[in-house]
Length: 302
Image (cartoon, rainbow, N blue to C red; front, top):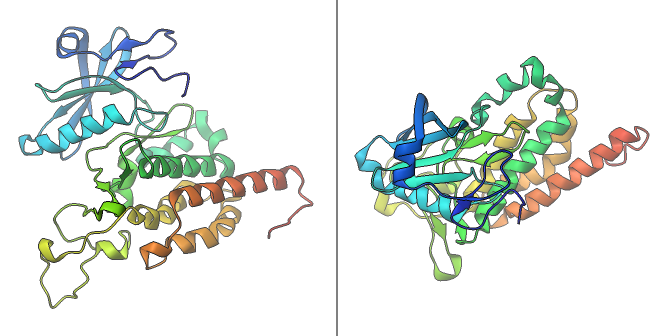
């Protein structure tokens, strides 16, 4: 276990040594002060808030039709507390509010802007960017082998949507922040999933997520075949491409990742690698390229 994690039902914040129990409805109402709205999605609104001189985020349900999604997200947040997931500080089911740690750099959508701020310019390297991609694949690996079973990251129909589900920490790590749409796959019990009830289009989603019966047959949710967690694997190359950006050395990284990314894009989901295999390859490439950068004479794999 990570030393910054507490046992179930407890948290610690900042430099504090001791773990405190998750805040209850009473404590949230009494001790948390809302400052300003910092984000809004289909399910909830997020407010930058203050608790005992700490900046925190208070999320509130905005659409009463989305109560189930909100409560599912809370259940997942409680069950999946780990170094990959935003820290839960408290919640109030009756009032549909969740309290989490605040990360000032915000979601991954702002990564490129952040890396152009003078303070973070030194982070804008192929090395740091590949480490962020490794973090992202680590989150997918964690969800695919979570304590609850194999979970699929469904809120991922386009790149922008994917990036909005994750936070960038001040020490440049990636955390998943939004767990409202995480259905469970259980292949041995024949349990597969579908991400929503509407037709999905475009190249970003996996082929098996698209309507298979052509334009002539109108879309019908009941006729749409379900699928498994390999939809997440299909999307990894596109998300990693965003992480790698356009800095010196990023094309060399892309070259080294070419084969694993081609495997991620196999039409047959069963032929795609697992998240663990992708992660192992990414780590190997990082080690190799660091060694190469240290000893420029050894262009062994190019």
